[in-house]
Length: 161
Image 1 (cartoon, one colour):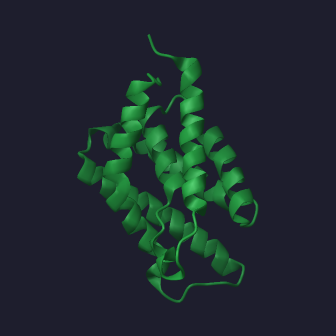
Image 2 (image 1 turned 90 degrees about the vertical axis):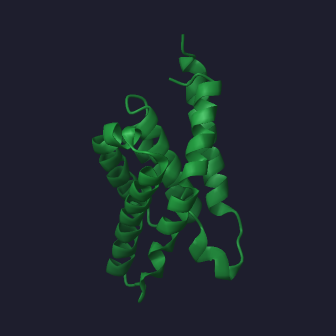
């Protein structure tokens, strides 16, 4: 029998850790190498529990991320809703993929997140002249197998279902 009450707190705790990791200070040269922790955690939970974590969760997490990062209100909501929707469409396939293929899909999804984020910033007048803004997608893909194993272990240990 699954522990559904405890599951919500585990999911929330993983997002809180993701928020903390996304705000952890890094040296100036390493800022472009920061993985998109919250996006990867959202992808995992939507892929693992699509009936529990969905567009509502993406909206709430996006609002919190907007407030934490000080970005225009609704920007992270928009990007996370897009990523959540695409993950919901693909979750059955993603579950079947080996970790390397999942990592490639995570790179694509985080890349879409970065492209939309950069596009909106471009509409507001601050545009990046290079494609370096896509570097977090590559770093996120490299970290995906470890994050997947950790989150799956948490899910199984606490019987989140």
